[in-house]
Image (cartoon, rainbow, N blue to C red):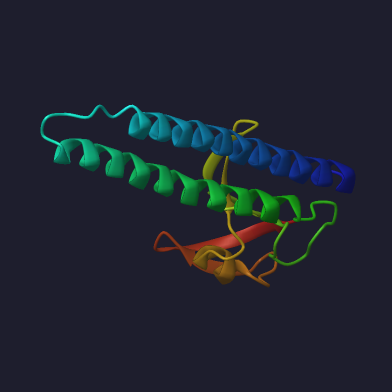
Length: 155
């Protein structure tokens, strides 16, 4: 691949990550609305305590989703700041790292994703694996899934 094609590929990965996080944000907002509606519509019952417990559970659920929403927004902000328009020679934020059995994109913690029929691990720059890869070069090796893994390419 040419340098331009490599940069285009990394930009495509970044856009896919942004889309995934945006979808998570939308789903979390909907879950917050559903939890609020559930808490508001809890009927007053003759048991009394059941009503209060149902409302409290709805509010706890809403709070949990609100924390998830804040994390997703923070993750999207971090990803948007990642530069994909440079070719790197060492593993760092914004780098794509190809190994024989695995490929990694160090930008956001989105786990395994299927992009263009390739399985790519999206790593948060703060993750233990990204920190292990940090500053490694093509030809360097590291331990992953209890196997010695050699870096074939970084860009």
